[in-house]
Amino acid sequence: MSSPLPGLIVDSVTGIDVALPVAGPGARAFAFLVDWHVRVVLALAWYVGAALIYNGRLSVAPPLSSSAGWFAGVLAPALAIYLLYHPVVELVMRGRTPGKRMAGVRIVARDGGAPSAGALLARNVFRLIDSMPLVYGVGLIAAVMTREHVRIGDMAAGTLLVYEGAEAPAPIGVPAAGSTLDAVGAEIVAELLQRWTALAPEARVQLARQLLARYGAAASALPAAGEAALRTQLERLAGAGQPP
Image 1 (cartoon, rainbow, N blue to C red):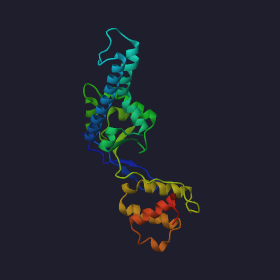
Image 2: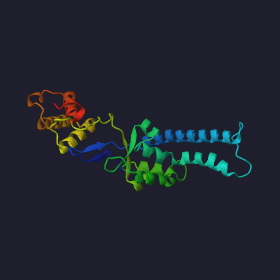
Image 3: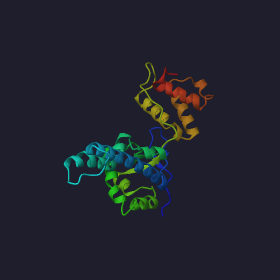
Image 4: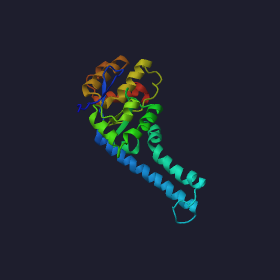
């Protein structure tokens, strides 16, 4: 068995690579079980509600003879909810589902960004293979045996399951009027703020001081400034308020 991968290495315009920790089989299984229960409940809720309305009485039994109305209004939507749950929810939530959120994981492309609609569709089409022969046997074995803990669908789609960061990216606006930031500087400051918690403390402090010194901060105040103060100045520089 291959040794586990510590993280997906993503290139950064700041010059420091960022490692996204890859989720293992345990996190995958937990997320899947939560999502399975969610989609079963949703599909059953539709089936029961639509069946009661169709029958006009307290009965969810299908009609004795085949009925296009029953299929179109009761059975087909319930099956669609169950089968399309993952691709639709992952597309809307950008690589996440309720189960993945509870497990603290998300789907990413190989470059660390959000997966494309095509990648999510391919990933879910290959669930047919991953689910064989029973209870996702093939997918579970692949996740355990592969170095990056990926199932067949991930291999086909070029995706990984990684742990979410401890902190959401800070909102970045347009540089404030009068700011000394140029387009390149704005991009670097935005990325540094987004990946602040993923960088080592020494690296983010050094980068923050270099950027602030380059784009107009008072040099005498920088050596004594702590992490919180440096981040506040970067946010102001990026457009959250007046430039420092």
